[in-house]
Image (cartoon, rainbow, N blue to C red; front, side):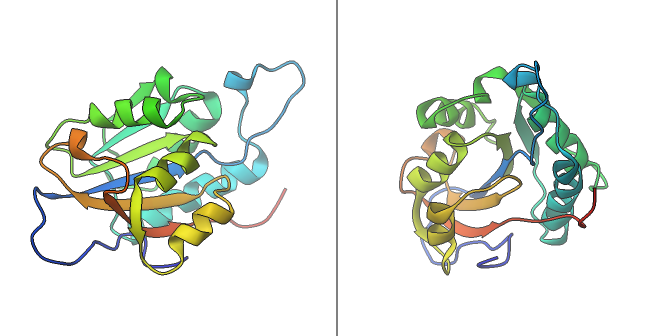
Length: 189
């Protein structure tokens, strides 16, 4: 992990309240024969790693006010297992547009976030999520940006911090990538 997962930017003169976009790639999925991609379940490792992602967010004090999650089974299950680690899970919106989305589609979904939401969790898939993080991050703490460029594996979490009056103000290059981490659960099966 490059920096603490919940780090916030410092500096003077931001316009609008501080906001965080937490990007979580679904946990490791299985590839059963005859199962359509959208319906693929989590693999054993994914069922261990998703709760670890939830614990990492809780320990960092980086819990979302709202979650937007792909409708794919592996993404939904990742969210369910991660959010089960929190005392009070936030409202979740299962959004079909997040499945197989590219950056413009993902940004469109993010821009619809109500202004009162300070921290948004987006649970989805690569390559869209990795591309979104790289597109939004104008700067990064430590080597977080290099880590994302190298690989954004299953269960990876990227935290982007920025200031803005509404979520629609989030634009390419306007966020600070404060961390990139890949929580892993205990080894087994």
